[in-house]
Every structure is written in C-alpha cells, then in structure tokens.
Amino acid sequence: MKIHKQTPLLRLSLATAVLVVSTGAFAEGFRDATIGAFDLGRSGGRIAQVDDATAVQNNPANIVDITNTEAQLTPSVIYINVDYKSPTGESASTIHPIKVLPNFFATVPLNDRMAVGLGVTVPYGLGNQWDKSSSAYQLGGPLYNAANFGKLTTININPTFAYKLCDRLQIGVGLDVMWSDLEIRQLAFPVSATQSAEVHGDSDGVGVGGNLGITWKIDDRQRLALTYRSTMTVDYSGTARLENFPGTPTSFGSQIKYPNIVQLGYGIALTDKIRLESDVEWVQFSMFKNLGITTGVLPAVGNLTQTIPENWHDTFTVGFGGDWKFADHWVLRAGYQFFESPVPDSTLSPTIPDANQNVFTIGLGWHGRHSSLEAAYGLDFYNDRNITDPANPIHGKYSFNVHLISLAYNYAF
Image (cartoon, rainbow, N blue to C red):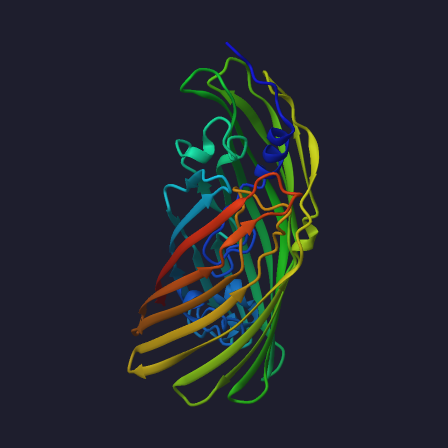
C-alpha cells in the first residue's frame, strides 16, 4: 500500500474546512440572515415593523405590541447548487441541494407594558457536499485536497423580555444560548485505484450571547428601530478519524467567534393598509482573522494543529420591504436586499464559496381569528466568483443557483 505524504495544501484546506459552512440563501460567510416567512417576504425591511412572533429574533422590543399569546412554527426550505470550474477545465458540483431549517417562536403578553418571548432558531449553518466523482476531485485535480463535505449545525435558544418605557418608546432584551455541531470530510491520500483515505472530523460546543432591540414610535405612522446581537464564541471539541485506513480516532477541536450585528430600520405606514421600511445592517466579520485547529495524531497524516489566516472583513447589508393588506384577512409582502460577502479572494475555498448577493422576495399571508398562514419565496442572485489571487492555492470560477421558500403557521390564543 502506497502512502502519499501529507502536503501543505492538505494542511491548509483541512484548516479552512474546519469552518464548515456553505454558501446559502441569505448567508454571508456563515450566517443565515433571514429567519421566518415574515422575514423572507419583506427581506430588507423587517426590523421596525415586525409584528408577529418572529420579533423575538428580529427586534425583541416589538413583542410588547403583540396583544395575544402567540406560537409560530416557520420552517425554511432552501435549494442551493454551486458549480466549480478550474482554469484547466476540471469541474465539480455540489449534491443534495435541498436543506430544511426549522424555527419556532412564542410570545406572551404579561400586561399592557410587558411581554416575554422565546425563539428556537437556526441562525448559522447549512451544509455543503461536493460530488467526489467529479473531475476536480480526482487524484491530481485542483480540489482533491479540499473538503468535499462540510456541515455546520446550530440551535439557538433565545428567551426575551420587552418593556414599554412610555407610549412612544419600548425596549427588549434577550439571551442567546447556542449549541453547534461541526463536521468535515476530506480526501487525504489514495489507498487503492478506486478508494482514498478520508479525514472525518466531528465536534460540538456551546456559546452564550445576547440581543437588544429599541423601537421609537416617532408618531402614529413612523417608526425607528435599532437592534444589536452580540458576538459569541463556541469552543468545539470532538474526534477525528481516518476512514478507509486502519487506526484509532484522535482529538479534534476548533473555535469560532460569531460576529456582532447592528441593524437600523425606518418604517412608515403610508396608509392603513400599506407599509414601507428600509433597513441597513453592519456585521463584524473582521473578528474572523485567523482560524486555529487542534488535533491529535492521525495515522499517515500526523498532527494538523495550526493557525490559518482568514482575514475576513466587516460587511453591510441594505434593503427595503413592505406589505399591502389588499383584502380582508390577506396581506402581500415584497422586499429586496443586498448582501456583501466578507470572504476575500485570497482565502475563499470550496467549503465557503461565498459572493455578493442581490435578493428579491415576495410573500403572501392569510390571517384568521386564531390561525394564520404565510408563505414566502426568494430568488437569490449570487455574483459569479472567479479566483485568480496568487495567495489562494485553489483557482477557479464558482457559480451559484439559489432559491428560498419559507412557510409559517401562527396560532393566537
């Protein structure tokens, strides 16, 4: 059996792959930016005028406006496909393009000035799996030593409290407790003519943070809202093993610092039935300057402990959205949002093939006495990304095809 010595590219791509997140609908870097059918339907205008239980996530100050106890289940279905083509003609595509992300919210008014809420969300993640049989992943191909599978799973528990300071000003605060699981798979070296040894790392951890929202009702038709979600750090620990090759598992660990996020939204009700809002958002992705990983010794691969520069930059989003109550019990929503990618050409990889995005969305809702139903659709236009930076060992062009659907069932007691 011939063992190929571990290359610098293997070490680099393994370290990059620890941040196992994919591009995704409404994801810059590793963030799922919109959560829920209200969010998706209004896209760039979802902070100041959010008036259902998803306010727990978007702006906890607004849950004090909800007069009944509400519970909402709002899953998202995401279709994402990424194609890669190298300068020399090798290609690869992702597989299993459909992802489902569940989210749940509940709000309870305590009196006319106070309310509590709870959110169970998936604020970061999705998954990315490349077809290992494609030409770019064959031995000697440009992606052979790049991760072929990456999955970041997060579940955030977010209890909140809101208080109306006066008729025009209200505030909400929340606690974020997020569990996260991190998994990678990457080809390491061939063990036969048809099979390769594959590094498989799996780890999890918990992070703690908080969120804050303030809403100022300028008058009966205008609102200004400011929200903040704090950074949190997750220390991951678990095991790594080498599949298709004898040996025992070893330790595997990493750390991810999730960004601070600040949002500002202005909304105006043009009539009793038509509302418009515009939001701007700043995300502190520059916290992700380097990525460190620690491992024990893997057979034939060795110890992969190292620190890899990432050099992400802060980003912004800007957009607008609104809704129209065009008939009794019915509302139509629409929005647009621009997302800037935080990932520079020098560190972009198949694990995180991110790009700037222009997103157009539409939503439709029916509201009954107790039950409400909503559906929203988003068409996400990612820019193509052509990597030629000499600092990046993997050159090539990435193209994207993304569609978003979010559904919601809300019950008001």
